[in-house]
Length: 341
Image (cartoon, rainbow, N blue to C red; front, side, top):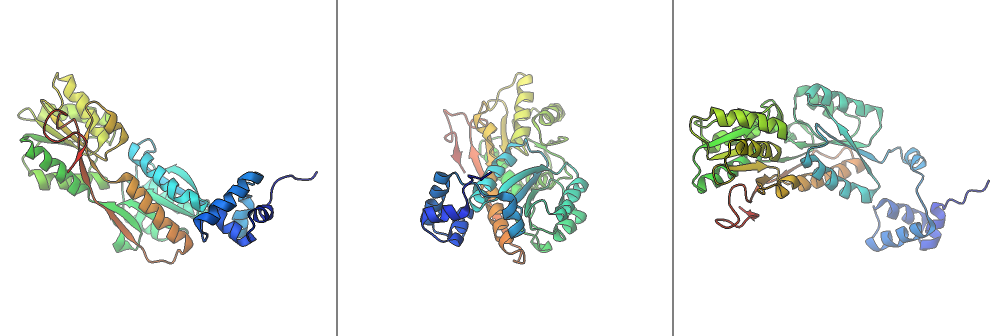
């Protein structure tokens, strides 16, 4: 039987360019935007689809990049994944989403599995980091970029943010509004974000505040922990700083169970500026840590390392930004809802 599948040579002839230029244009590298558009139009017209297996064998690459996180349902990671895909896809890479599990051991095991060659690199955002994980990343057979903790001292490319400073922004915003009895709802303290956000709250608010630790960074855990927080406070709280948006939403449910209002009785802030916080009622004041920007920066670092794994490690920092909404300031007064600080 004769195959009617279009070939790369036919695409090159239709576009009127060389075979090498056609290949580069289809991969999105080493070609001008006009060339890429011209070649892709010819490929679409001919119904050309690349032979992924043959391409991988020829180039000794899988053209797959793993994105590994503890909870693939967390909206922060969804935003990162979208940004990573947008950067990598034009260069011919697919994004494979994986879960690390919630322990440093399971994360370390996943990183060590990279030696089997199923991906060309990994972008990872671990909740917990220890020496074994750092060593596994350093010894990985393919490039690894970490989102979360700055690891420049270990020669690992990373994208980090100042979540401690972001918590400080939230505390100062509440203090500016006259809130004085501020409680803190944090996630597990053995995690990177839990440690940083605890440090930020204590630095900004001082020692004499009620603090409660949730078992994880979810709405359900936030509801349970917020009930304890509200019951433990010696005086009724007038504000709660939550370590992420999901915990903040749990806190708002706990406040409403007591017949209290947000922000009238108790103001609430979150962190991560997720889509769910933007559409929740009341809309959630939150500290943006630039999920999209961090995902994009990590993908760009990965592209450089995929082209040359011997490049020196690079670090990118994305700063926090407080986004003021209805859970601290009613739309009719004070700062405009959705305003930035």
